[in-house]
Length: 104
Image (cartoon, rainbow, N blue to C red; front, side):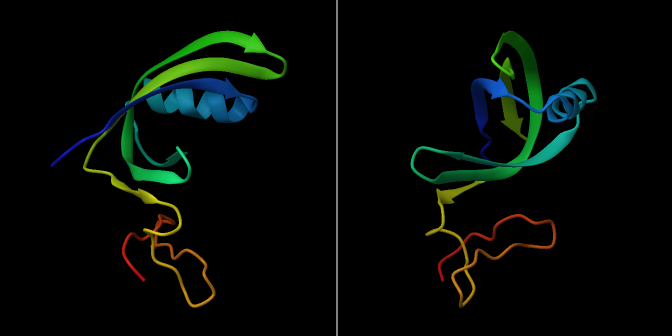
């Protein structure tokens, strides 16, 4: 199996979400994430938060940097083309609200 390691930085303006994210890191919790980058490329998988660090505040946001490692091989594709859609063009989700990968 292949794993992915993702490092990123940014600003978060929701203190409750940042606290929850920090709790996941502190408790070694594996969390389902759907990450979007580069013109709609989507990476979906279960990730462990390896590290999280607060950086400077900016306006109403808290700066942070983090590193995530997948606990299994993640799905990857271009949204929405590489994910199953219903007859109305809506993306289909599984029972845990993750996108389903495949060709229509």
